[in-house]
Structure formats: C-alpha cells, structure tokens
Length: 325
Image (cartoon, rainbow, N blue to C red):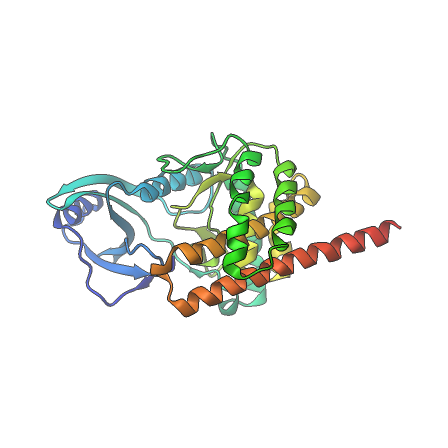
C-alpha cells in the first residue's frame, strides 16, 4: 500500500485516538487516511514534526493481527521493515478496535517507471538480500499465520493440491479453452514434487506498492497482513509477476543466492502460474473493490500472462533438448 494522503477527514473512535496518544506519549495526534489499499484502515499519525503509521480496525481484525505478528518476526530476523512501537485492543461504544502504531518508512514505491535502470537493479539486489533473511524464518504450517480463519497445510504438496482445485473455475472465468486445464494442472502437479522443505515466512504479496526504495537504493518491506508460510520461491514469483523486468529478476536472484538455483528458478516459474490463477479469482471474488472495466482488464492480463508463461516453458524445454542433442 502506498503512503499517499487522502483529503477526506479521518473518523477514528476517540477512545482509539486516546490510546494512540498514550502509546506515542503525544498530547495531540492528527490522523490522515492513506490510500492505495482496499481496507481503508491505514493512517498517518502526526504530532508536531514527527510521523508514524497506524492501523485501526474493528475486531476480530484477523489480518491486522497476523500482520503485526509477521512484521515483528521479520524485524527480529534483520529484515528492513518498520518497527511496531505499540499495539492493542480498545473498547468503544461501537465495539472493540485493534490498533497498531509503527515507525514511518521513508522511500517511494518500487515502480519501474519512477526509477532509473541503476536504481531498479540496486533495489532488486537489496530486496533479494532482504527476502533471503526473511525466508530463513520457518513456521509451523503452509498458509496463514495465526489467527487462522482458513485451513493450513502440513506440506507444500498439500498446499498445492488445495490450490489446484481452483484451476478449472479460473480458466472458465477467463474464457480459456477447457483443454488448458490439463496443461495448468500438470504444472501444479510438478510443483507439488519440487519443494519438500519447511514453510518459510513469506511476504505473500511482494508487489512494488509494498516495497519502498530510498535514495540509496535500499528497500523496506511494508504492509504484512498477507504474510504466509510458503515455499520461498512463491515470494520471488509474486515480485517477478509485478516487476516485469528480466534484468531486475537476475539481480534479485543473484543477491538472493538460492542453494539450488536451477530448482529455485523452476519453482519461481511455476508459482507465477499459480499467481495468475489466484489473481483471476481475486478479480472475480472482490467485485466491490474493482469496477467492471478494471476487473475485465485484470482477468484478461492475468490470463495472457499465464499463457505466456506456459509458452516460455515450452520454448525452454525445446532449447534444452536441442542443446543436449
């Protein structure tokens, strides 16, 4: 989520505002809503010349609680991420609200159009090092961190099998041919055998809006509510899908330095296909967040990206076979 102020006034329960003032030891706090996400719960808190980021959500606020936990784990692992100063739950006449306040990260979103080639490559390399630290944190299951409203899985194989159930519907939504189901399912079946390691802490939505780049090319990872236990290649795949620049991909992978480069690249490719299928579902399931034109364009783009990935792999296999011959 980009830290861009909204001109609309912020309405936060006064009891929560009082809790924030106490946490910040500030007699007055001005809250300004930030745009860029879909939940409307993130604000910039300001007192005199000091600023922080705060999030406020009515209970149960499960994703906010997961984000607080994930960010703390990442920070402890040496990942460059905001430090949560305080968090809590406050009663109001309208019910209980969960809130958190963290340090304000400086920088601009990792967007190809706003950075020079040198900045992109430096930031990609730095992000590779940050993700390597993050993925050193292992978890107890594949899927969401606690609190968990959805099932979690004991292995990557089981996680992939659950995702595979969503292939036919996604292809139908995109208007793809029924025979495409078998091609995509084959990728999922292969992916299920390619990773037998533990679930690692992953950002989960490692897109440019959630990565800030400072003037020195250093990256800070923000907004942790979608963090999950996954195959580390899934995080890199998500970033590659939203940063379509091959040179940047190579810079990130070189800095990440996976233990098994060939296998890791293969899994990144497969996870990008999983991401395409899941993105089609996101556009279809969250109709309130997208107008019809945006939804249609997003589904079409995801489908075309998926077809491109399948073709790219076929070409890669052909080249490899020819070289061996």
